Amino acid sequence: MTSSINHIAPGTIIANGTIQLQELIGEGGFGAVYKAVSVDPNGASPGQTLAVKVQSRTGISRGRANSQAREEAFHSHVSGSHPSILPLLEIYQNTGYLFFVMPYVDGGDLFGQMYYKRRYLGNSALIKSVFGQVLDAVSHLHDIGVFHRDLKAENILCYDKEGSRVAICDFGLATNAEESAEFGTGSIHHMSLGMFVSFQRYSPRANDIWSLGIILVNLVMGRNPWNSAAFHDETFMEYIISPASFLQAKFPISSSFTNLLVRVLEEDEEARISMREFCEEFDKIETF
Image 1 (spheres, rainbow, N blue to C red):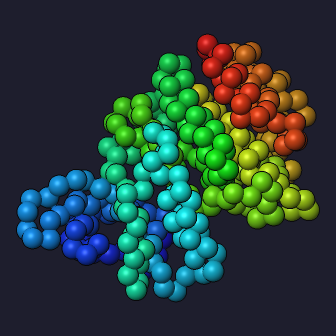
Image 2: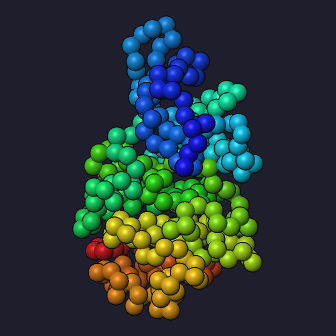
Image 3: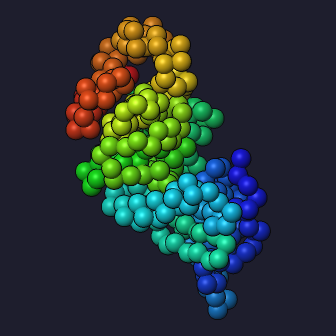
């Protein structure tokens, strides 16, 4: 749960008098997000509607400070480089807080569209479009040497209320390292097996591909295939024994989609499908 130290009273003016926080619209371990509006310090009428992520800079752990530094560095680096990556408009800070200023989006996040509005179930065309945007954005990130490491529905925002145009956000766990020993990074539902096995380094690139596979299952089926990709998860172990049989027994999906998922959710990250192949094979899918 987010500490109240991330909360600022609505109505507060920040950013040298140019932005007014209006209402709290989200919170989590990352901090608090406010709907805001740009204002003219000379008293002109309000202008652009914005979203401002507020993070405390005081009383935080070294890990949280590192996450803030990563988000600032990596989001700044990738902002504006792809239409499906949420732009970072400005970063402001004072002695107590860090403010990330971004466009305000009307559609909330992909999690809400999937689980509360059931937007994508049975709509192959919309799934193809939305996931295609995400896949293309992550492919672009990998091409420029950035690995997100926290890909999940909550970190994909929807520009419109119909959930048809999306953008990736939240780069607090991003890295440019091809190998990592930072285990347990991200959401437990979306981590690959390598994130749980602490005796060897893992590939953030391959982990992103795995996370994309879980998001695709979320979109098509409206649920997770298992709780965690760990040896103690009985459902996951059923999958490991016979991947294709497990998927077709659990989900009413096509054989072509099953074959793609088996390659994406491959236990051995060295044998897992590449991003280029993922994009090519996804384009060929006609029905899920």
